[in-house]
Image (cartoon, rainbow, N blue to C red; front, side):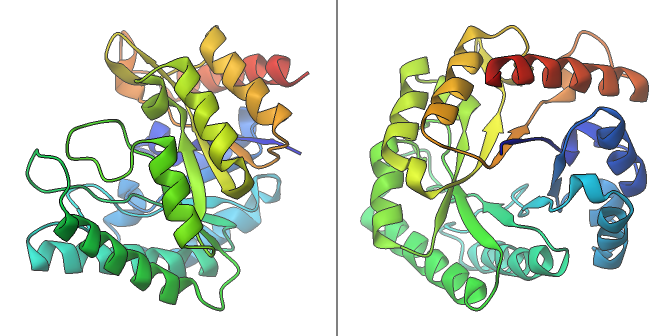
Length: 273
């Protein structure tokens, strides 16, 4: 059965326990916990606190996890940046397992220069995947790589590219970012589903409009069509709302954020009914 969840970064400024309580109150059934959520990241990653929050909110378990990506690039031409970025991703796999998560989402990285990726960039990408494979070996948590928006230096931004990587790495799963795909077209979302649904482990759900990404889905016919296409393809994992709270007309209060999520939940439930 599909689970309606939300990224913890929608509650960027709040402590872990308040984030979990608010998602519970909104009636959602899970959280994608960003390791870079400040209350967690700036306190040296207290995984015990995260595990305690999961235990205190069993209706939200199992969670999913998003590996660190801010300021990082695992395929950077700078070997120190690449090494640090890859290490954070590897450690995120272990942290996700310890927290009882079912999926950890990772980004593929990008060419450092704003140019089409070269053979050398793809070699670094393959080395990165090899490290993730080793980190995932013997663990229950699924590692899922996310499609990026189609920029000139993106390493993974087409359905065919994702399918090729999945075929070459049978252990790897896929996180579909709907907003990234929507920046091409609504049809592009369906192409990702058609080609990659068999390895789909998570979906980041939001809307892209007028060049602005990660908008709420409520009222969007494109988002509704994507949800129905996922359901038709037999997807039964998480639909993870990945909403940028700064895209609203004014800073949202804690209560307003809960209200937004309740509206998003009602819309998605109607799409799935």
